[in-house]
Structures are given as structure tokens and as C-alpha cells.
Image (tube, rainbow, N blue to C red; front, side, top):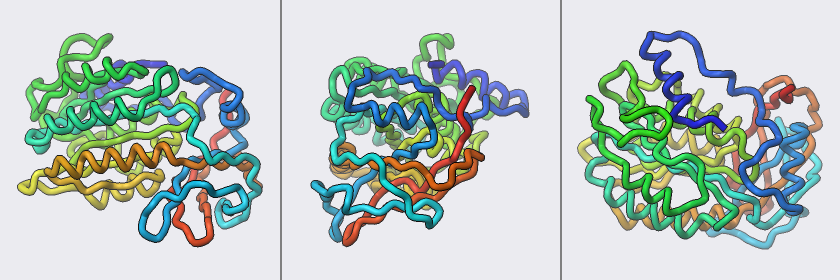
Length: 340
């Protein structure tokens, strides 16, 4: 798989050149390739990716007060695509599938008073959530640049070293320490100021997650304010949806600055995640990570073959219903044709 940093150089240099061409087409679905070890338990989901005509959805179920509901069965659910009922072919109430996690940290000037807490709490979260020899994660920081601080790895120690590289960067090249394979220093772009949040989501989804199978999630620590991105919010959401990633946002902001709550709510709602309002409260940040960990460990999965068999690239709405409960899932998928 390509390094995110290498692709970022090409993508963002196009912007610097007032560029005009897009990155390689993200609409093509992933090949049947995984960086995780396959097992018999994972075969149904591997088949989903190979055949493309089977849709798989990971989701949580919550009670009236927001508590996670375990122990439900296939018969407790109904699935609809574009309003039409679908037949559930595969169901699992376990979360044994491999997890691919992207941790994304806003290192723009508005985050300077919270960065130390973010490093500490995120490090402990990774230690608790990632299972040895099964789960993988990568680390990205974004400000006026987008930097891959640690590529895909199962090593918590390597991810901690990546976290230690995070630096507040308000412009002028004071960002990360450099990314292996792309030289020393942050990725060059044309804008001296900004927060490339949407670019970071797009590129992490398109370059790091789209070739992975199993469960995938992005966790973003940010105030939610984008400035200067080449990609728009809807394009970032589309990239996350095409990579089947659930997006969580820890909304961390200084009261002296604004926040992008509405934009982040849209991003997370469309992908099956949610926003946690943290502000500058370190305890709330820790609680948010704990809740995300609980949700990732309590996921159900459903697979179905769509009654609409056309692979025409259109967006199809998905609704999962469970009587008396709230289902937290992505809002749909793109019916992409298979690659050659």
C-alpha cells in the first residue's frame, strides 16, 4: 500500500501549482487485499470485498438512555436499502474482526493548550484497544500541512513514538519532524496558514483505509474548523464512506476560538460515528476515548445482497431497525463496480 505521505506530496503539490488535477479516482473499490491475517471466522467479510455485491455494515445498538445493548440476534433486526427491505445473509454479534484504526490529531495553533493531554490520553487508548497480532493503526497530524507520523502498524510503541512527534504548527515549517520516505520536514503546500482537516480525512480514507478489510474507524481530535483544504466536507465524507470507515470526533477547542460542531456532526452521522464535546476538559477527553473503546468492542455486523444489483456508482441509503432500540450505523454506501 502506498505511504500516505508520498501521496500527500503529489496531491498537495498540485494545489501549490494551482493545480488542477485530482488524485487517482477514489471510487474504485478495494481489491481483495488485507494487511491483517485471515482466519476462518473472517472469511464471510473477505468474500464481501471480493464479490462487491454483498454489503456489510458494522453498527452499535443503544437503549433509550444510550447504554449499549448486547446479546441481540439476527431476528431482532430489519435492513432496508433505499426504503426496500433486504434479506440478511450474514450476522455476527461479536467484534472479533480485525480493527484498522486511524488516529488524527489537529496540531494547528488553536490546539496548543491541549496537545500534551491529547498525547497522554491517546497513548493509553491505543494500549487498551489494539490487540496484538490482530489490530493495526496509523497516526496523522494536520495543520497547514498533513503529516503521516506513523504508517500502519500493530506496535503500540511505534505509535507512541509517533505521538511524541506531534508539534503545534501555525505556519512557516514548524510542524512535524518529517515523514520517512518524503524527506525532512512537513509536506509542502502553497498556503502559509490554515487547518487542512478535510484534506486529512480524505487522504487518510483514500490512501490508508480503502485497501483494508474488517472493521475500520477514524478518530479525530480537532476543533472542527477547516481552513484552506483542497477537498470539501462532502468529498471528505464520501471518501470515508467509500472506505467503510466509522468516524468519531473529539471536539477539542479553546473558548477563545470557534468550533465546527455542525460540520463534524455531519461527518460522524453519515459514517456511523458521533461527536464528543470535550472543550478543554481532560477528563471529558478520557471519557470519550473510553466510550469509543466500548463501542468498538460492542459492534454487530450484518451482510446482505442488495435487491438492486446495478453496480452504477450511485449512493444507496441503508437503514437498520431494531424494535425499541436505536441503531448507530453509517447512512449508506456507494455501489461501485469491481476493479479489473
